[in-house]
Image (cartoon, each protein chain N blue to C red):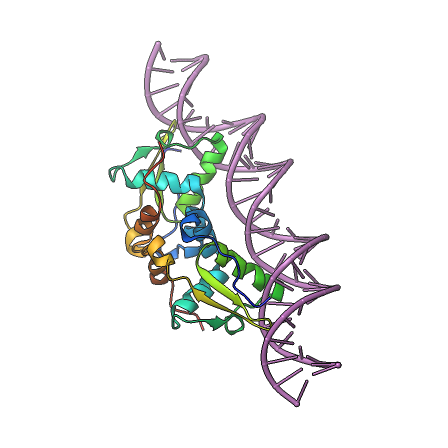
Length: 106
Length: 106
DNA sequence: CCTTAGGTACGACTTCGATAGTACCTTGGC
DNA sequence: GCCAAGGTACTATCGAAGTCGTACCTAAGG
């Protein structure tokens, strides 16, 4: 494959999907993790997702369809980054989520 | 009965429950409606909830347990208001949701 | 007192989402 | 060329959530 995964236009994304995506603590965790990194791509394998491979795939797809992340398939590994348009489409949302969440629990 | 319904301490409310509560379009609709009114009590019967009575009861309970609303039973009718502490516990969250939603669809 | 309106509690049904197992694919290294 | 690592697609399972019907409750008004 080796290409970008299909993602919805940012204008097509429904708030329902965004809030449902962020309601799951695992997905919210990786989003907050991503917000704490630089704006570039990061390997999917570098995130804390203690679930089966197919379940991780599922969670990334949900985040893509919520317009939150962009994902690129590299054949043997895939990479994600936050979609920069998201902040303009849903201003303050991710910041509010981050503010409500304890930064991490190591 | 004629009294206040039990609600969690605002500090005990989990973000999971808040986001799940707001992910439902019906519940989000009544919350946004409530935000557009004055801060006092409003009859539950004055909101747009085209569902069976028992289903409406369910949705109000979810909003209570998410720390978003306070509810008082008056015997033949019950009344809700936004919890003023919510904004301090989850700053910017409701505002972000309101900003992301078209004001209404009449 | 009786009726009605608004609402709760409980149980049943149904739909949806999180999870995982298996098969298969692609890049990279040996 | 072969194999391992990372990941997707598909399917199945299981529990949670949305929905509703029924029985019952309470205050308000005639």
